[in-house]
Amino acid sequence: MSIRETDLYAPVKAFLEDQGYVVKAEVGAADVVAIRGAEPPVVVELKLGFSLALFHQCVERLKVSDNVYLAVAHKAGKPFYKAIKANTALARRLGLGLMTVRIEDGLVSVHCDPGPYAPRKNTKRNATLLREFARRQGDPNDGGQTRTGLVTAYRQDAVKIAVYLFEVGASKGADVAKETGVSKATAMMRDNHYGWFEKVEKGVYGITPAGADAVAVSGRVLGAR
Image 1: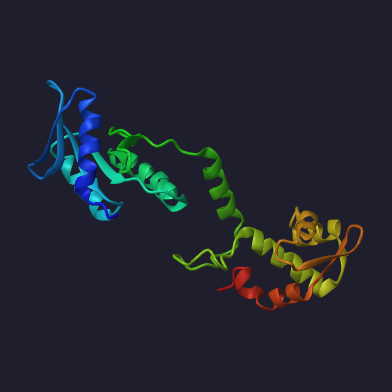
Image 2: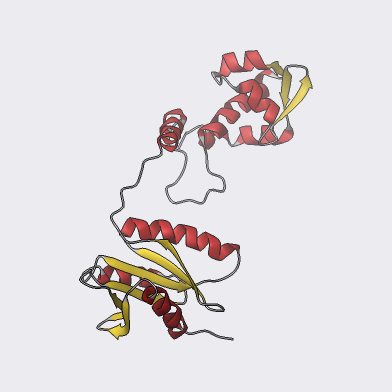
């Protein structure tokens, strides 16, 4: 059975009336307006799904009230769960509220309320970002490219190890670390994330054909552009 935006109205109206609001539809440009005593009005925009246009519409409603919600139809499945998580974060940053409406039983769930948003900085992620920036040699990537084939500091270190093994041959992990300056060389060869290394004997590693191929294109990986 297909649903319409108007199907969201009755559950939202009932939800707000249970909290003491007087609710009316299509007041001015707003889908729903709710009033409770002398409090500022609550504005709700109804849509079947998320869109940039919906956020634009709700931001526009902030000109008439600080209490603006977007309400979308609830859907089952992981994609919608991920959409809720991402759009709740966006709504918070914009000072908007977000609610979902389960059409089959009229359940209204509020995921966030309107209000000023002051994001807390993640110091761990900040440190990781700065560490990766400092370790990376040169600027080997193009801004805007996909994550596939992205050159990281880890990959550059792996190439250094591969080049050394290609030129010198199988070596002890301690020697590789000393000569390449990659302190975690032994662990990287043991983990073998890219399939470039192979264990020859205890503590000694060599290079695989895949590693030799990586050496052939190492100029760009090491930062030469």
